Amino acid sequence: MKRKKLIKINEYKNIKQDDSINKKNKKFHKQSLKYAIILLCICGFIFCLYKLFIKKVPSIRSIPFVPSLALKEKIYFDKYEVEKFNEIKNKLKQECVDMFKNQKEFLNGLIRKFKPKKIVEVGARFGGSAIVMLNAIDDFKDSKLYSIDLDSSEHVGECLRKYFPNFLKKWTLFKGKIACEYIEQIGGDIDMAFIDTIHTEPGEILDFLMVLPFLKENAVVVFHDIAIQITGWLEKSAPYIIFNGIRGEKFLPSGDDVLKQDIGAAILDSNQKKYYQEYFRLLGGQWYYFPKEEHINQMRNFFKKYYEKDCKECLIIFEEAIAFNREYVKKNPKPKRYSFTSD
Image (cartoon, rainbow, N blue to C red; front, side, top):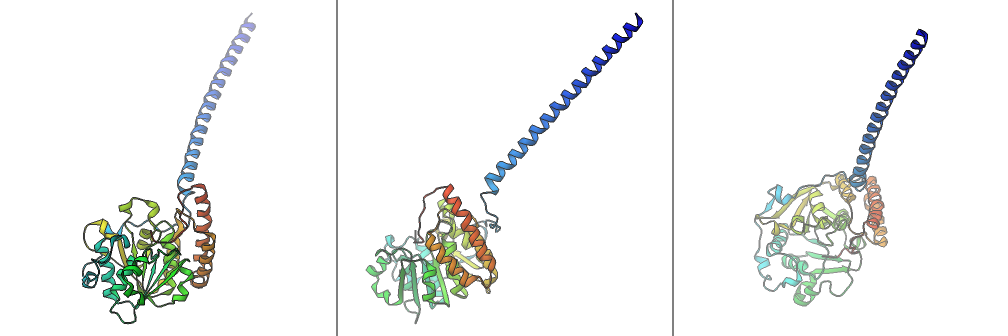
């Protein structure tokens, strides 16, 4: 009898122990499952961040987005000659040139101050900005303006031909192709470049790269539409990016009105070759249109000819930017404008 009781007691103890072990196992499994779910959530969150932010931004974009110089630094160009511009200001129709009065005076003043012999304009449109520049060099002996525009229509330069035919003797127009197809014909020792084209990335960045090898040491480069805080369109940020990115002493029209500081100039630092890679890295953002393959090939050949010797990495960066953005534009369709013409 006692033996049976002991057996029962032992069995009861074994059952209690088994229950205790089972409870511990269940608790362990619950905790394991909880930690596994947490770990899975963390991994999923990291993957989402990767998809949203990292994968969409190519590795070649290492240069930080620079705050607007118009707001951060006083680099104003205060004293410049306006008398020469006053000779034509009442004749220059607003539909011919999309600039405020002070921006036209600024462009005129730069030319009157630096007296360039050779000016290249990329993005001619109706010829309004060309009129301002040609008027400014009218009394400079041997000074000339060369304008380039991808648009091959008769509207390119029509305001100049119609209202100021007396300026045509100092003007040469190249139209129908991108800048790299004409710049060799124009030749080197360019004292000043005025770039005002599509505004959408990579527009003006590529335009600048196509002109840069032919610029004289310490040339002056002018960009219009550099104030993205006016338009609020990030895809219209190409002039802003390249103006902030290039190395040189920079100038803006004076005053506190940001709207009227939508134009800027830079006197390029000496030895621009050491900045080539920085400039090509500016192509590393998201492009909001993709150039025609014909133009890509023309730029590829041009860059190989004029940049490979001093910056082999530049060609790699260019190809990476093309590969990334070709796929990006396909997957993220936006209004595409296959043109470098003035906007």
